[in-house]
Length: 88
Image (tube, rainbow, N blue to C red; front, side, top):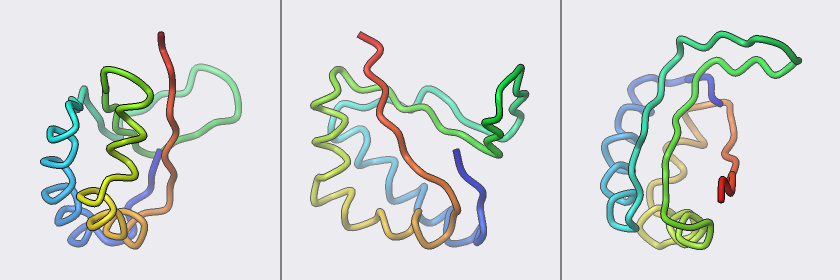
C-alpha cells in the first residue's frame, strides 16, 4: 500500500524499478488506487502486486544491487511499505 507524496519522483522510480522486477523473473500483475475495503481497519490508498516464482526469488530481487540502486526513489516519494506473501 502506498500514498504518493512526490508524483514526479515516483514516476521516475517506476520507470527504473520495472526492469529490475523482470530481471529477477517477476511479473507486475496490477496496481492502482481504486481500492474498496470490504471490512477491517486496513485502508490502503494504492497498491501494486508483483508475482515471483518463489519467496526466495522475491527477496533476491528486493535485496539485489539493481533494486537497491533505485529503492530510495520509492521510499523518498511515498508513504507506504512492502510486504511479502507466500501464496504457496
